[in-house]
Image (cartoon, rainbow, N blue to C red; front, top):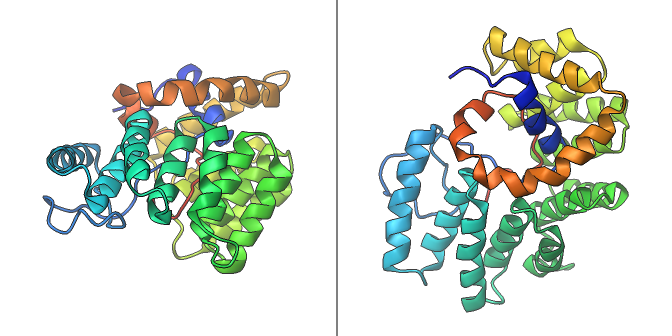
Length: 292
């Protein structure tokens, strides 16, 4: 499927820059349900495989909704498919049964944030770890929520705290870089994202974020070169062109803020365009290296 036209791509680019979404799947493909009820297992890489895997988990969940491992794995797969409201429902039910379980509360808080319910996520996520035993993944998710709420200074404190626990963790560095971009510190955003992209664990999303920031700086050739590491030359060129069009606005940052308000409300309704959007530069902040 071809990349969607730039006039339609702009909301995906701008809204995701504004850090409303935490999700995104990664890992290698797996077959059937053998071992896949582990909520930390690698997710399938293709949409078709992921949908089939999620359907299998859904049936397992219906048969045993109180099984924590199955419910967490199912919610994680739903999040990877951007079915955020459904993931919230699954994790909310699980949290009612396991109100003190930090893994459950972490998954619930991340699902809330992905569904645009930032204030609720802000309340739940602190319960998913303790000051004595902080979890870098939860700290990163708290940073994303703070960015969603426009408190970039607080967000950057969360990311810094996460990096003290997990030094050079590429997804946290990527979140920090996007936070700098949102606060219009583009050179610092670029240097941070270059650090993230250089890490062995960096994935496509980290490189997409770097490409976006390079384009926002007007470094279009460099942005296209980075984008082409994961996209075809044609798709990379069209994506950079869409960003160039966006920043030609009289006030592109105002455009980003406007689009950001719509993204959380519309993201869960965009499943038919999912394949196309994955071909577009989609800067995404993440609650963890892998959705949990």
